[in-house]
Length: 420
Ligand SMILES: Cc1cc2nc3c(=O)[nH]c(=O)nc-3n(C[C@H](O)[C@H](O)[C@H](O)COP(=O)(O)OP(=O)(O)OC[C@H]3O[C@@H](n4cnc5c(N)ncnc54)[C@H](O)[C@@H]3O)c2cc1C
Image (cartoon, rainbow, N blue to C red; front, side):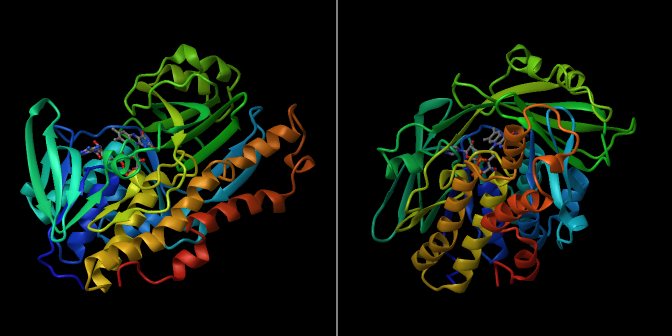
């Protein structure tokens, strides 16, 4: 176990940074978190936390808070764009996992983690308005150089024994160690994300994947408990193959006229998709981007974590989950080793190959791949789905992805805790 007095700086107060703070606190450390935003605000739209990530948050004592904030999904249904059901499968505890799968607002998850960090580590452990602009190291310490994002002349410097860079997909720290890496890699797919308050569909705990990238695909799921009018917040993502790359800012507003026409005919007896799009509270547009896996995350006293280490397509519900798994694996390594630099190395050896496989799988072998296979084989409506694909083939696609990403049920339910 490393010394309790080890001073740790975490750069970035997103999902990965805050989960790391909680995981390190759980093993007796008191890290300091530096976030560039002036104020923590619940930004973003919906995300999914698969059972492997929920297990980690449960072991950190957050299950009840997740239950009160998100929706424990019970099933996933796949449809063709004509509304024919391809596959229906149980999710979370309904499927036999020991932990649920939660659909949740990304910003509310971030605030839930933030509140837990303040309650456990104290109000002074998160510094907002600190943008890391450089890092350096000598034999004894690591240094992080900060700038006030609203006043570039206001600069400060902090030293620590270890630095964890959880500064997201635009990581400046990664850029420092990989200066030749260039821009993010664009998949030629844009996502329009929205939320609409309306009555739930199907079981009220159902996630739907429908259509195809070529003609318009939709991912739809509820992310809030019902209100007094029996309405829930429905999160939806329209994914469309296109070549119009704009900047990848999570908060860039999207325009309904750019994509809604693709879904004009999607009036199913369980959901009126055009009306759901029209009634959205807000719509953001974001390009599908990632980076090729790199072969090193740790540099002496510094290590990358979350999107800074492994930015991936937002397919398969793994972005936030893999950052949470990173956080707990890192805590497990630090707990079981005396030398912190060895622990950073062990964390990298464990997590880098796994997340590289997820990055690659999300480029073609995610669970959504089923929709593309079916669309290729059935460009016009068919009577039954088994005319074009067998049940065995359907199930093999999901099973392969679960194995790659670490939430294969048998393995997850039976493995030891990541933090012994
Ligand atoms: C505003 C925002 C909205 C998002 N919305 C969605 C969404 O709707 N759906 C979705 O799937 N994913 C969304 N994401 C991404 C998602 O949260 C991540 O893919 C995933 O949770 C991995 O978490 P992370 O901590 O690695 O990255 P993030 O959650 O992106 O967190 C990175 C954090 O680091 C901070 N930061 C960045 N650079 C610096 C710096 N130089 N110094 C200090 N702090 C820095 C950022 O402000 C941010 O708080 C969003 C991210 C952000 C920042």
